[in-house]
Length: 357
Image (cartoon, rainbow, N blue to C red):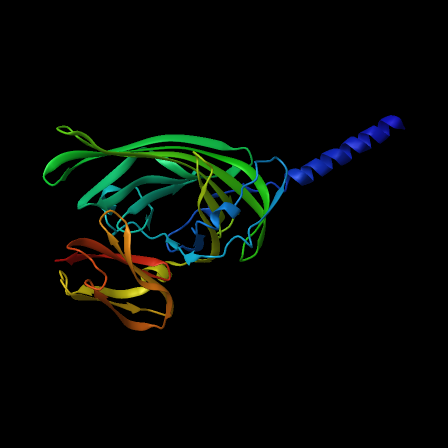
């Protein structure tokens, strides 16, 4: 009788453990973004609020996180994924299946497979210099399938020659990254509660430099971050993320998912036509565009270093039809030079160059 009792007890323990293990989610290719996906993220970068975003240690048991009260000062920060063709620098990345504007005039190019989503390279335009940087090997941005305790490490480099003011230079970028699934459980954001999420801990070291064979190193920078991202195995995918400085654990940015728009038409046809005239200008220029449907609209101006210098439209609800925005370069105190006007309509982005004389 004792042996039977012990056997039944072991069976019960195994059954309980199997039930517990079943709660550990696995993120598969179904969570990878596709052409036409717009992730409507709400971001909080208010300095006074960021210290409230704390992160618990990794754990092999299910955890519960609640970030409903921390988000106070937020702004819309959508991320769109579109087909690579016709976007800046697309010809340099023929194997790309996805493209995404990273703000200003920087575009990122990705490909996807059964092992996840990889960053092939970026097309940048800064200080009048345009360059396509191809990473070797590709940076593994979103590994799949992925579950608790899985980990991947990548060390990638990109280098491309170009010219600056007639001087030959080389732009070099390094990306070293380790992604570990360090926790799982239920997370609550201002939108709702997600019961089956997996947390990715992403440790990144990025370095960029500009080198001249005549003048040596002209520019060099290095940045080290730790990002905690919560994913669920669905088209919602990224539920929330917190980005911290690896040097002192200070929080730089926190964001949560408000909703996802899918479908190619929602990206390609959101903005029917766009124009910026007169251009060049020394006084007033007009940004004209046409919305296919009612939309949330943002428009900003960036200088060639990627710094935002003006906000033209801030999260404004607009009806379908033709729209026009007046850009008075004198009132905005824009000095002579090249600027980027970025228009976002329901997350679909378009960037136009503005030459101020």
